[in-house]
Each structure stands twice: as structure tokens, then as C-alpha cells.
Amino acid sequence: MNFIGAGILITDYKNILCGYQKYINNFNYLNGFGGKKENNESYYETAIREFIEEMYEVTIKKELIIEIIKIIKNIKILINDDYIMIVINFTKLKDIMVFLKDKIKSKLYDKMPNSLEELILNRKIGNNQEIKQISIIPFHYKVLIHPLFNNDIIKLFNS
Image 1: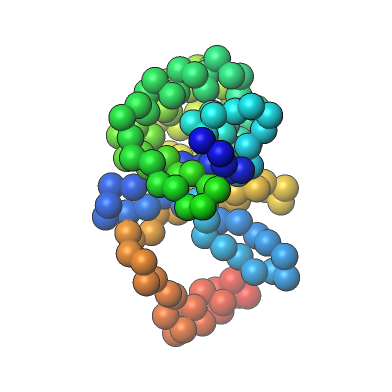
Image 2: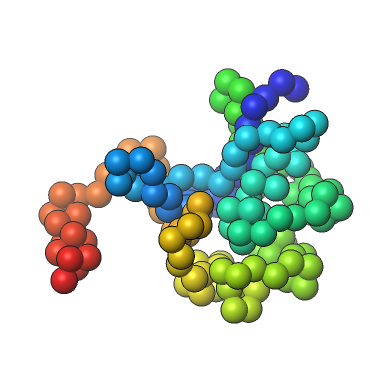
């Protein structure tokens, strides 16, 4: 299959896990986890490598990627032109976290996370991270921040 990028979308069809990224012109985005294909990677390999790099800020060995492919087998695939998104649920995410717990070390966590709560709340925030923070948002295609709530956030940020 011809593609230039791949990623992982984590959802239970009520909520979606996303990452917070800072882009050009100080616009901040909630985004998924993924990126560009390297060399002769399969879309599974690209999606998992990018996900682990963004989630933990580590380089992952190909042998571990192959093992994670076995963990997330039988999943849904979405194709958007030349980008492929692998859809997994929160149980598969937990399985990946358990698998990686003793296999990688992340500078973003004092202790490797074992739960979704630890993954989100125990993450260290730095300036050079591709994904600064992790959030859960509702699974809905029309979500905006209400202007009054946004003003509250701005006031709190500036206080």
C-alpha cells in the first residue's frame, strides 16, 4: 500500500485521546499521534514508531515495534488519501503501556505509566516536546471551545 504517513487514533467511540502541539504563529492544536514514513516501513511500523516517539520521546527498536503490532492486531484502519490511521481502543493502549513498562525509559515520566490517568497526569511538560500534553476529548466531529470559557482560560493563563 502506497502511503506517506501513518498514525494511531485511540478511542472508545465516546472519547478520543489526543496530543497538544504548538505550531507556527502561536496557534496551538489538539492533534493525533503519527507522522511520516521512514525508509521501507509498513504503515503499522510507521504508526507505532511515531506514536511511541511522540508519547514517550524515545526511539524504539524495530523488534519492539513488531511485538506491538502483535498486541494491536485485528484493528480498524482508516485511509485518508496517502495517510493511514490505525484505530485502537483504550484497552489496547493499556496493553501497549504494560508491554513497554520495562522495555523503554522516558524522560517525560519519573515512572513509566501503567494507566491512562498516569499517562495524562504524570507527564512532564517541556519546551522541545513534539506533543506537550495529552488530553481526552469527546468523540464528536463538531467541538469548539465556548468563547466565554476560552476567556476564562485566557484569564487564568495570564494571572
